Image (tube, rainbow, N blue to C red; front, top):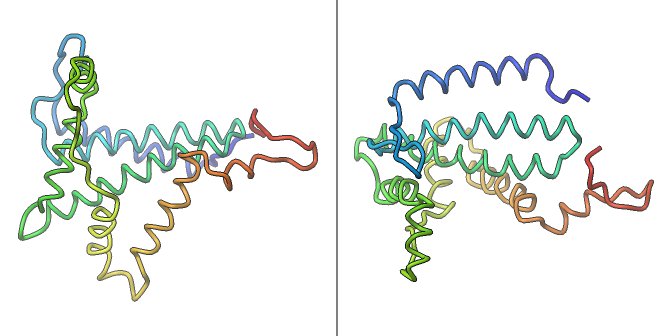
Length: 195
């Protein structure tokens, strides 16, 4: 069963084309040996572009899983896509604010580029304390709310953004409600092969 119709396919192609143009605008990463490819110019714009790359890839993968009937797994991917979009949006505010970036927005950049698994694993193996400053979802949603306030028409954008995140959390963390959606009473069993 083909989940994505021609309009959705065209929209995703256009989104990918746009993200490809953005990725060209931030330059090419350099080869860093066993670490693979890395950027030396680490900033909020690069973070946004890289998150956009992940959004496109995640949307494509989710559609593929939906085509195979794996709605639970697609929803777990959509949780990652949603988080990436929240990050992009929260940093958007820093680029257009007269006050510049807030402290938490700089922490987001530091968190993202400080989460290189090679460094963290090496430190942990050396029994060093491994930690990265984490910016919570509430700060990101507050930035979304501030930017949408002029267009919200009285709607509670914070509650809406939090509700979307909470609904997707259950798929990401294998919640009871979401697992029970996999139960098919017609066959008296759980659907674990899609369908």
